[in-house]
Length: 357
Image 1: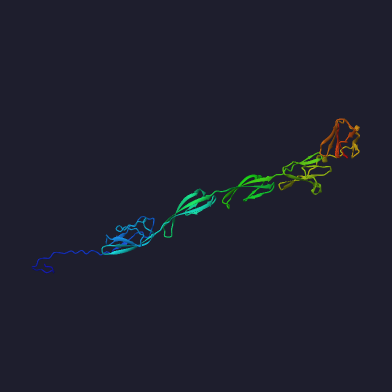
Image 2: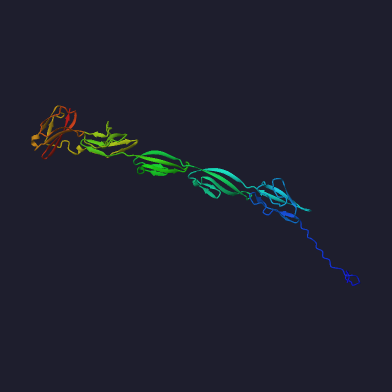
């Protein structure tokens, strides 16, 4: 059979196989594009003709001309066109490198404050260098190094004085006399400052002591005194401004005591002699009154076993005494004033008031 399918005397022909290569267009790709500047070095993937070279524009992209690998550390973030040229074809690809940022910052907080730094809540314990990674608009990581300074809490010492019975508002704490001494508060509005308050309480001793013909209160430092007549609507007793009051009239008195602007008044009190009849004796008589040099005592002989005679002044001081019964008492040397003659006998005591000129 010949080549056209007929038989003839011609020699038979042999079969021929023809392979046609597929013409694949040349292209390049950078998987993962766009890139962040801190990513690993990417390499171009070439489809089609191999063995070409790579160039880029504009300048700033460090790319291997043969390998097509981009050196990220040596490249400047930006947009570039990479051209791959083979023997007969060329291809381009746009590469974008987005910047990452390494920045430093500083912040200051008070010792009682916090600072939100990315995902971290910083407190005074985080003073110093802190690092946080943020994402930029392009999705690339940016590292921020923050130096945190913590202002120390200042300690302020103050002193306040209140009167007994008063209160003092110390940063919301209501203090009274039971809080006398050192109290501490943190004022958040003032740098977290610690304020130490020494609370002093002015306490007035209102003890009033009745003695014979006299009332007295304790002598207190920096105190002023004013005696008051309780039976006369607490009227001021003129010129009575000491801690003692000597009385000659029947009545009750109180003392107003003032210390450092604090004032308080004692209870009303009666001197001791006011509890005894000024002339408790219905038997004895004395004359003259007022006496000048000699005091006559009548009816002494009617008392049994007189063993003590005394004269006391309004202050309760003993100014004369005798263990004998004397009917004429020398009072010449006594200062002018009011006195009481006391006579002790077997059945008790007689008291008689007299005046001395």
